[in-house]
Image (cartoon, rainbow, N blue to C red; front, side, top):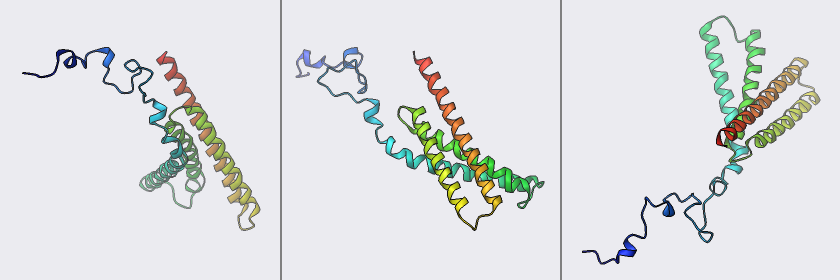
Length: 179
């Protein structure tokens, strides 16, 4: 025999809409009950963006460089002192670096993904301009190295702009499907 009164026994019914078991739902809570929102849960992702984006871009572009080197060795048509290894592969890797930098930053952001990607693209552009400035002011760097750095910077920025545009399209399609 149950010693609980019948009105207390029926106070919580999981099938009842008024007592939703989802703690993130706003339908089941009054104004006095604090509700966990997405921004309250994911605030910790914002400070990690400046760490996650460069780390992911470095790891991803390094992995791509290793795969390119290995495939070049397996194919046998190109050598490490040839034009493909010295000029084309760094441009491809720089493009992927820029794309990963902005796409990871935008994907990691809880909201404002396009804005976050654009801010990280701007930071990357400032970093590239600084590196080009340092390269042109050093006497030890050759003209070929400077040209290669400028071309790699352009490829990096093109990759970052494409990532921001892709993020914008994805964000726009998500909002179109949700409404």
